Every structure is written in structure tokens, then in C-alpha cells.
Image 1 (spheres, rainbow, N blue to C red):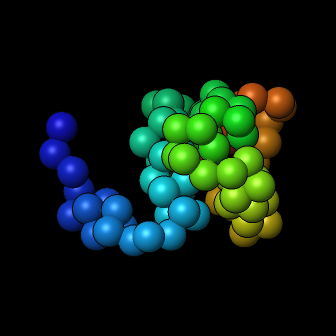
Image 2 (tube, one colour):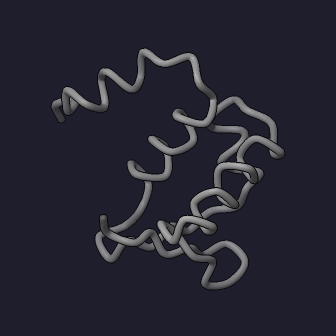
Image 3 (cartoon, rainbow, N blue to C red):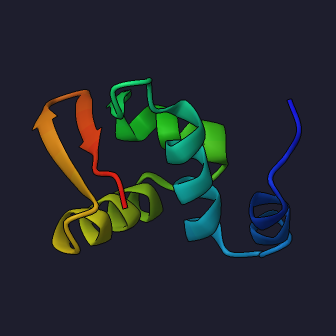
Length: 78
């Protein structure tokens, strides 16, 4: 699968937050649900759980994502 130019550009960033955001976008399902834990996100993105949580909290605060229940999140379309 080809990498979108914007994704390629963002991947050049050294920001750990960007890597978490890209991981979320790549791993959501067709109905925009994300089935994961913060531990999994942190491990796969090679960041701390605190960093992963900070990104999730920022997304909640801006209305881009909501927690449905533990391990299930809804990513809102933008």
C-alpha cells in the first residue's frame, strides 16, 4: 500500500506525539473504532504510556476521539 504524501511528511517528524497519532489513524477499523490499550500503543510506538495518554487526552479534549469503554475508542471523522 502506498504511503500518502502527508503521512510521509509527518513521519519525518521526531515528535513522539505524531507517531502516536499516525498509529491511531492506521489502526482504526472501518467504523472508526480503535480496539487497543494505552500499553499497546506505547509499546508499538516506542513511547511511554504517559506520552500515549497525553495524546489520547488531547484528542478527547478537542473532540477528535472519545473513549467508548476500556480498550475501545471512537475516532471522529474530520
